Amino acid sequence: MSRDQILAVAVILLALAVAAVYVPWRGTGGRVQVTGRVLLEGVPVEAVRGSKIGFSPAEAAGGKPPANGPIDEQGRFRLGTFAPGDGVLPGVYRVSVTAYTKTPDYRDSIYFHKPLPSAVPERYRDSQTSDLIVEVTPERSQTIDIKLVK
Image 1: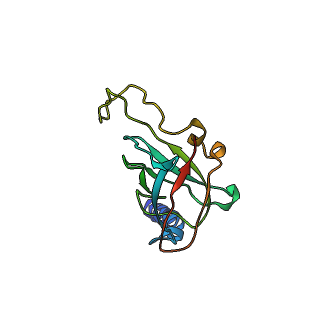
Image 2 (image 1 turned 60 degrees about the vertical axis):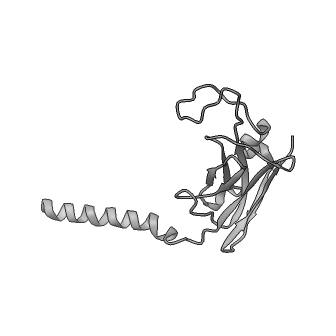
Image 3 (image 1 turned 120 degrees about the vertical axis):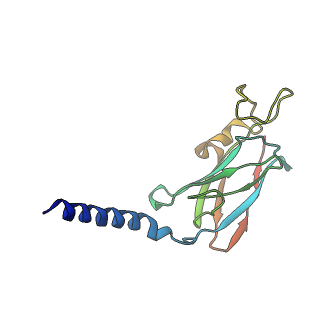
């Protein structure tokens, strides 16, 4: 085989590998737009930059990718699987919430190095300890409010 033939085969194999990863998820790939709010004792969590919510597949063998998204200062979120806000594949998910609250000396800056206090109880930071389970149904969009208790 000549060098040009080897290069052509390598390019074809690379294209096939990219297609194998991309094709099952092309377009919306069946993803559902999921938005909602994080509520603590019925009140929206006032989160700061760096706060996030995560959906991890409840069935580990299901092969679904996780989804996540930032939580804003009114406790709202929009989830994404492959890109921010691109949606979630239908299924059952365990939920984790990592939210921080402002301190008197807080500055909304990527250079703010002081640790911020958690806005939610510690058990919600890990999907395995949060006991929060939600189902994303195969609709076009879905609103899911995450209700936390102290």
